[in-house]
Amino acid sequence: MRKRWDQWVERFRNTSLARKMMVVYAAIFGILCGITLLAMQVTLSIYDGQLYQKSLEELNFFTERVDGELKKVEELSFDLAMDYEIQNQLSVIKSAKNKAEYSFQMSKLRSRLTTEALSAELVSEFIYTDKFLTRYEVGKRYVELPVGIYDSLLEKFDKAKGAYVYENPTEEFPYLVSGRDIRKHIDASLDYLGSLIFVSDIRVLIEKHLNQLKTDVSSLCVTSDSGLIYQSEDGLYEKIRQVLPESDYEIINLEGRKYFLCQLTSAETGWTYVNMFPYSSIYFMNTMVRYCLIGGFLVLFVAAMLILKRLSTAITRPLNRLTDSIQIVEAGEFQKAKEYLEGEKRGDEAGILTQEFRIMLDKIMVLIHENYEKQILLKDTQYRALQAQINPHFLYNTLNSINWMIRSGKNEEASEMLISLGDLLRAAFRKEQLATVLEELELARHYIDIQKVRYRRRAEFLVEAEGDLEAYHVPRMILQPLVENSINHGVDNSLNKCRILVRVKENEEAQTMTLEVEDDGPGMTEEELETVRNFTMVPKGNGIGLKNIRERLNLIFSDAVFEITSQPGKGTVVRIEIPKYGGK
Image (cartoon, rainbow, N blue to C red; front, top):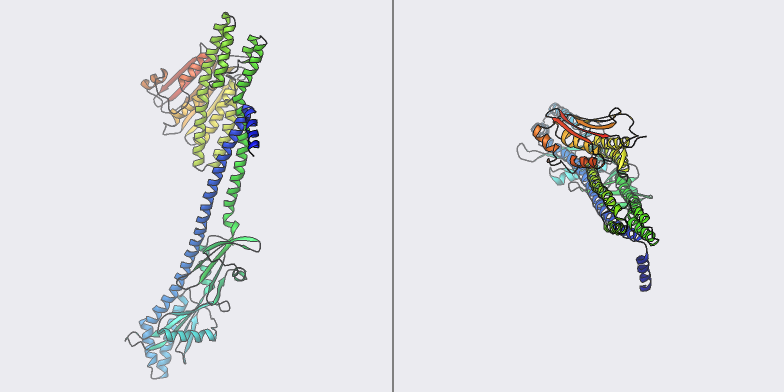
């Protein structure tokens, strides 16, 4: 094992620098992806637990609503049993001395019970009995009460001495039968005056609140010590009775499918409520998020490896070119070796080494060429420094806008912005120092497309172009910063919608190209305008300053015009006029 490890270390030591970087990058990125996926898995697991708890809370809420309805039935029985008018009528009936008076009072009692039964939402039928001769049944629907249940309930009435009692529904008789004896309270004698029995359709009572369970595809069954009370579909209880969990909730396998099952026992009635629904119906999106995250990280890992491969190649390329140049020097071709390294202008160690090697070649070459080469190097180095300042700032601002869109939940608009950003970066990251006027205008258009998403209600963008824009060249990245400057100082400081006009025009007579960016924002006072013109005003944000643009223009065009005009309340205009450069 030790020998194999030493072989791998030796192979890694002798491999190319680019491959070493790829291995290191892959290891670091893989570890980060693994940690991120693990964190997301833990987060989603916690979220699963919250969903389980939420389902149980919904079942608890449903149970409380059903218990509340049953409580109303109990309260109704108490109110009728304690009603003074009913107590008085029953007292008169009990002491009636002739049949006419008895019949009259019984008719009044029946009329009262009929009125109460018709207005009682949860009770299908009222039954009054004196346990001997009289039994009245009134209500919205007649239900034939089994003799066994009737006799059992009357026995419980005797034992309860006026308290509320009930018989649990069963699968054979799915009705809640409840009630109490009516005891005489008007004289506190507690004499027996009769019994009230209520018959309630438990299916109607439960289904009244079944929509409280938010999952549309859920199945519910209710059981008691007496057996099944209710089931939302035939055969449900027989399916799940063998797999009922001991805990409050559990994921079960039933007929080859996964179901989430939660159960709750009511403290009021002792009934057990069991709610079951397909696992995928509520956790489908959660599962999809897991798969999408894994797939996304795999795609990201592959994309990152491709990018890192290009990056490592770009980093090691100067060293490879320097090696090739040294081999050219060995053949005595100093000028050719120097020309071979012309494109390498970097500030890192490889760049410094390359630069020192070129200086060594300069000292070997003729002194007359030395001064000329230094001037070229100075000018090119200044431009590279400016360009290195531009790209990171611009990319940072754009990515910050995309981040803002994603945080706001505007994913479609963020996607459009990312597409525009890709087009923009392809154009902005080209290596040439100059671009055609058309390319520079297209670069600004891509930037405007990005900002349209962000400032759709606060800014209006117009672009005007005239002339042969493909024939002439301008320094790359000078138009887009002007648009960004108008947004920062015009749109962001305006209370009303701001209009930004980008105008590019070829002046055939003057043999010049004019680039203008105009906004109708708040403008500037003379004092503010003077600070901008002499570049003493601190730029807003981290964008490319106007001084930066002017210096880049001066590096290439000695007679470039760079003007800034502004009036308070009327906006600001930045105009650049440069000689035609390039041409057909």
